[in-house]
Length: 82
Image (cartoon, rainbow, N blue to C red; front, side, top):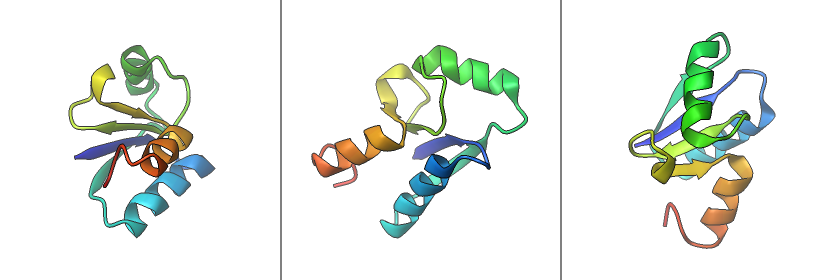
């Protein structure tokens, strides 16, 4: 299962969800808008200070897809969602 850590105001978060929806990829969203503690927890796992943060499977560094641009680059290279 894909997990997208997201904030409402983020255009890249919206683009990520639109991409996943348009490719019928099942995912869940974790809203970080008002959850600083959860955001800091995810930052410790990923090393990223931005959203979206996209994971495939368990929320571990090894399962980190990255953020929107990372996801698109991996998709175009045929590394994910094929």
